[in-house]
Image (cartoon, rainbow, N blue to C red; front, side, top):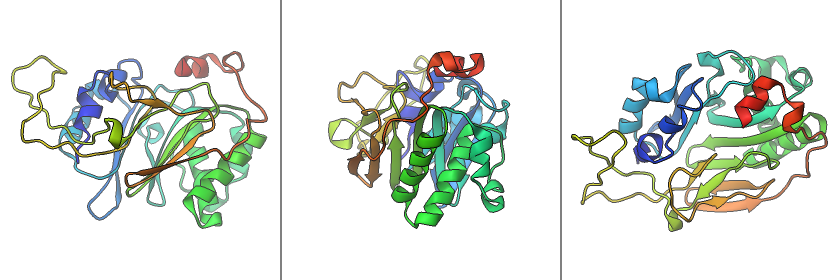
Length: 271
């Protein structure tokens, strides 16, 4: 399938959202051989011709895309999401403090996977380490988030973690929203659009174009479909193919942060 509609043409597509979040753009997917592929740039999606071209033409079964409003780390390609470690893709929305402590949990091997300065990438490196130790992606993710929640100050740890045909989506704890659209309630992964002479953002659907069922997970509702579901605080949605399971394995964070606890840069990125 292609993800053109959600990336470019939906009323709240990532291209549209990037006018509010202009500090980086990334699109990740898995190749026909299930290898992760990324294209990232420290520019807004609406200004990025490569993003538009790939959104129209890349075919995959699993996509992770992100537009960034920087809170930690410079505006650079290495700080743009999604991140890629051990054949997994990862994107994060939120703020986790105590990066010096988090860094101390990483071995030299873990730390070698980190290219940038963001809290997001360090969280991913620790999750990756725990997955390796646990021997299971769900168990490793749960273990890592539990320790982060118990020992570090957390404002929001909303995340997407992807393997080929599998996705983990976490809303934790509650300040930031995370929405899901299931395939039986309107989720589609492919709508072919025809540019022709229509206004920018307009959409034509070819009569012979069959929509592909898909799970869509996003930080905000991307169109007016009434079937978008808001994940509950602490909900971990595990999507395997077109089957989804909701888990609630987390206690509230031991050191919760409010907007007043954040730096001006961090607070601005979250609101």
